[in-house]
Amino acid sequence: MNCRDTESLILAERDGTLTKAEHASLSVHVASCPACAEFRTNLSAAISDYKAVAARIKVPDVDEAWRNLLVRLHEEKDNSPRKRPAAPVLWFAVPLAVAAAVALAFFVNRPAGPAPTPSAELAFTPPPYDPSTIAGADYVEAGDPNASTLVYVDKDSGWLVVWATDVDTKTSG
Image (cartoon, rainbow, N blue to C red; front, top):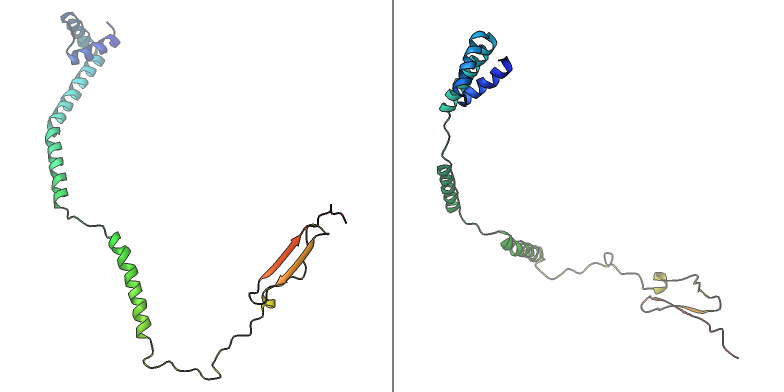
């Protein structure tokens, strides 16, 4: 038996799957091979350490942990105060407060007596209304040179009106 076969037998021994014949041949080889004996010793020491550490670890009960979590969640939900959303209240309160402030400022800053008449030098008189200064056209170009074009500025409204008509070229005359 070689060391490679012995290694797999040592691992099988760890799992507890060796037959009596395999166990006997393993014992004979380990007694004569110091490397396999050391491997067997190291493996059994590692397994012992693993079992000791695993025994110290406390694994929580999953069902109990789940029940505790649900209880905590329900307690937090029941203890939290119900809050009304503030947005609808603010939609009305803020504009009303602004309107009240504007109205208050308007009435508080209002003079107590009749309005003073401005003196002649402080009075503002707007310049006379001249529609021609508002709108005007120096040049209007029609698409057809034979077209009839009329430009008119309305003196009352100040509108600039442009009429352009096409001349019918098939007129008989």
